[in-house]
Length: 200
Image (cartoon, rainbow, N blue to C red; front, side):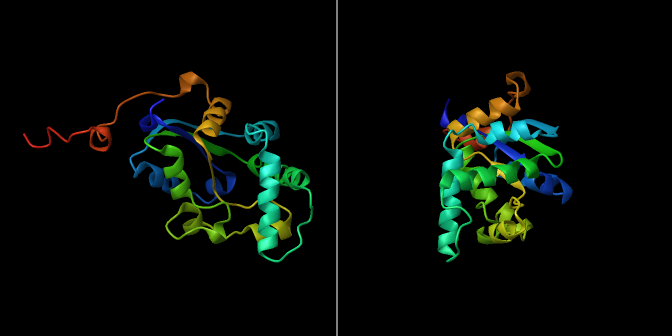
């Protein structure tokens, strides 16, 4: 696949739905020039959520290590010292969070789609996300408060972390025939080598 046709999965999580931010979130990605290939409203099961986070076999350990490191940066004692155990706790919280209500699942395509979407979305912790990002602009939750409440951080959106992860996630949420291939007029401005034909 050409880097110009890179795809990414985006989920608007239950808090994004409840906050009526669907249109705002979609428009943030759309305005960059990314193309929406698929979209559906889904009520995920806990099993689907577990499969989603298990597309990376090292996800539990990686998530646990990041969380433990975040505690240390704040000079706090993590509740678990083992990364895998910490990852299991995070996964259980995510399963409850993402299955508590409907989500909007989407596939976006375009040049460097994964990186562009990550930049627009912001960091995992909304409190640390930059102004101008979805998480920085539209939520005031934080990982610290989520930990105190023993729940997942309410950060509105999931976005694929890598192109390989995106490929696996997309196949979990969508059938191949649900991805609609089509052309947008604006693609010639974004992708054509020369801008011939602007002047008549």
